[in-house]
Length: 405
Image (cartoon, rainbow, N blue to C red):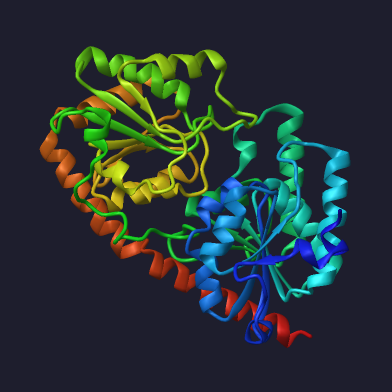
């Protein structure tokens, strides 16, 4: 059934929209897969508090409903395929167009590759006055051949349909410029980047019961990873690096806080089995509250191949942890090299192992980096600061759109 076929398909956190809510400017925020809702925590609520009536659109899933309820937004489930699927994509485009014609929002914000393309086209066809494409990262960075060309074309169309392309980091904006995804005037960056910032009260140093639950002593070295367990996040290299680390630090444990994502860059069954049966690797699966898990770590490693701006690095830094991550687009913006963490080239298990061993051998350096990281995040990437910039930018964008009517 199309979303516009029945009002029953439109749900709000309270079940009914109030009269006062109808007087607010209406913004539709669209993503492809409900797991991306993890990056929207606080953002939707901030827009609501800034005077917007927020509708969240995504493929069906429990996270869609939970996020909308927690953020005070309306949830609409509309199926979109993550991969290339021409017929299904055409159907999703028609549904999005019909939905926007019915809702008549004054603003849209679509992000992630598929929702960015289909939502952008639908918003353009529906005549939405203010249209934002939130560029959270570039999937094409790890694609090759025809697929890369198709992804690049899709990014350019998404940008063409939007009035503003909001980039998640300095390096991502630079990459978008280099690829000619949009002209410089259309590519915007708010502050130092990041779509949400980090709650520095929630993510802070402190006690945790996680080590006790895992049967680990207080002095046991623990390397952490948080996020989707996929190839693009560098999991194959991390597992190889961990074997090298064990030769130097045999008491070390690896804590993987995340889930096996059934995406195009999913881990092989063999590697999953290797992780599950390793005596010193602990895999949690999906965790709703990751804050206690950061407190159980000595440092965080994110050996990613592509990012927009990794939230997990900000969360680790706010918790007072040094971070080892790559020089790739997005991730290199999340660390002050040699001050809050270390940057390494992607794809080299030896580089991961060398950086981690250096930090494990020098507790004083880890503490200095962790303290500097927390100060840096508090100054530049607190959620209050980042979300205030977003709300102000969207209010001004809406004023401009209304002025052109």
